[in-house]
Length: 175
Image (cartoon, rainbow, N blue to C red; front, side):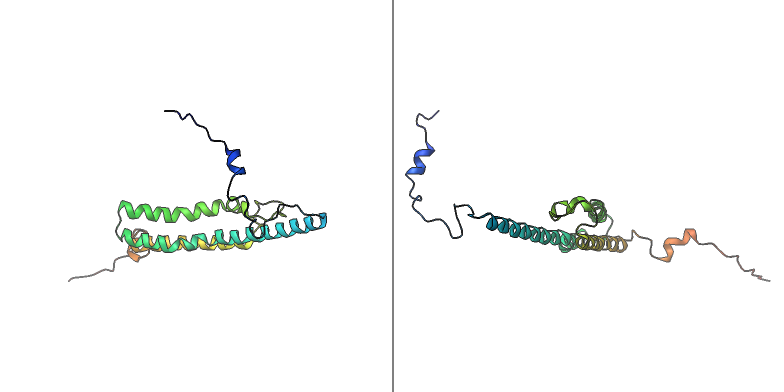
């Protein structure tokens, strides 16, 4: 079953037909010649890395709103009755915003700028976190709307009859 021949990778590299190709544009094997150029490059690299982190933080902040069309379609397909499938979807829709808001600082810690002293504080990326909370509140509102349309929320006067006090009956004389 075993093969008697072996393959040496070192011999493949020296005889490769790709060895004589020029390097791709922008590729350089030489390191930076001056330390000034190197520090300028690392500063611009750190700045571009922080900009990329901020862009990713915005993407993460609006991700609950991006998921709303699919969740709305799932709610539509689950129907208006109270069945186990529709209850599972509504439960997921109501629970997810609370879980997201509870873990908001941990969710955004990877997007914190490198100059941040405490990446887990609410003061880091405040605007993105507020947008994230607003998008989760929107998801919660859609879930509550579905609960109301299924008749699970007490919104009508008939739902509160048990708490209503009855007045005295007027005296009626038949004779």
